[in-house]
Structures are given as structure tokens and as C-alpha cells.
Image (cartoon, rainbow, N blue to C red; front, side, top):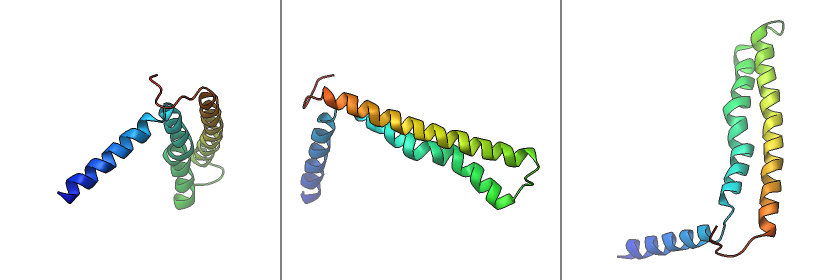
Amino acid sequence: MPRLASRTVAVAFATTMAAMVPFFGDMNALIGAFGFLPLDFAVPAVFYNLTFKPSKKGVVFWLNTTIAVVFSALAGIASIAAVRQIALDANTYKLFANV
């Protein structure tokens, strides 16, 4: 019984918080741009270069370096765009909006 009551309260609280945030998708975009984009593309290329140490004259090294730089820049731009979108949506924010 205590577990059922505590879980019911937790789900009700989470649902209420989710309903209060109509721009939840924009927050997901920020998390994706800041967290997942670099982890999926830039970090593996850097780790490959650090682990296997390909020749700096070779194509593999420069391809990995290019991938890391391009996707790091893209992550930065996407993070700025996501924060901008959150700020724009916050101007028209209404509590429990039915969007």
C-alpha cells in the first residue's frame, strides 16, 4: 500500500510538471544538441585518433578531425538555437496551455 501511494503521488507530480511545460520539445532539443550530438559523432572520432594514433599525414586522421570539428561546431550552433527557441517560447508561456 505505501508503494502504491508513493508511486501515485510521484506520477501525479510528474504529470503536473509536464503539463506546466508546453515547450518540452525545445528542452529536448537543447539536451540533444548539447549532450547527444557531440557524444554520438565528435567523441568517437577523437577517441579513435587518440587510441589508434593514425598517421597525421593519412586521410583517416584528417577525416576524423574534420568530423570532430564540424559536429562540435554544429552542436554549439544547435545549442544556441535551442536556447533561443526556449526564450522565444517563454515569452508566450501560459501555465497549463493547451497547445
